[in-house]
Length: 306
Image 1 (tube, rainbow, N blue to C red):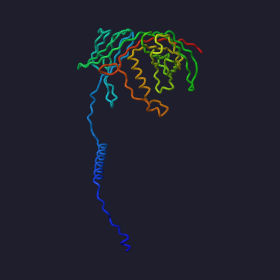
Image 2: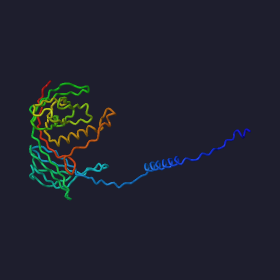
Image 3: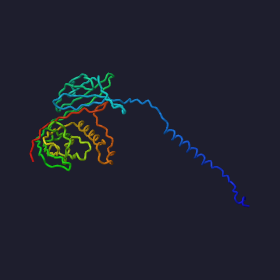
Image 4: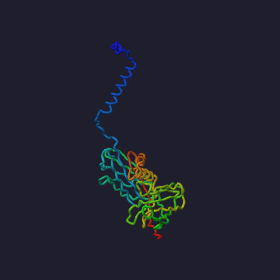
């Protein structure tokens, strides 16, 4: 009786064909996924998108210095100079000079630049491929006055600041683009700058990569006489006021954002990945880079002891 009570009869259940099909397809998909993730594939990758890269910022009363390169593969840190190119430079649509370079990607062009003139560059390689760019040099804007009241205050880090007061008159009825650079007594670029005005706001304490340049437009003061107060840690500075072309302005604006987004000396870990990728501005047709002009006025600041 006890054996009968402990005996259990095994009950066979028929298989559901829908369940079997679902399991089979799930197994196939999983197998494909696993093998596709672990399989090594060798690819003979070639970069067919190599382009010429031009670098040229020219100013008045100087000759043009042009540099030409080719783009570098993403895994290569070698500089590829673009030599052997034929160069043509046009001034107001008239051929001003033609020639070639001197090697190492350098192309000195013995043409003096004048404010208000349009310059067009054409480069040709041995295969007849053409790269071109053009820009118009803006008129010079003179500094009316530049003084430096020093010292004014010291911050929490012990850095002593002076106040540079810069005045100039904007050209009316025209969009102008400006860049200001402060130079030390040894002509080095002063990077410790603080400005707060309706025109531009800049504070080196909030910029992880000090640029040493102030970039702005005359949108808020077109045709007016303007005064800017710039605080710097330099006791004997000079001021450089550049009237730059729109191409120059757009290029500098994009590269400034690029430098700001670099992960250098960030104090807060949450700031590490806040920068978005930036495509550098270029006015080069069939290539990359910049060909742009600017005029400038340099004035030594009059020291006012405080």
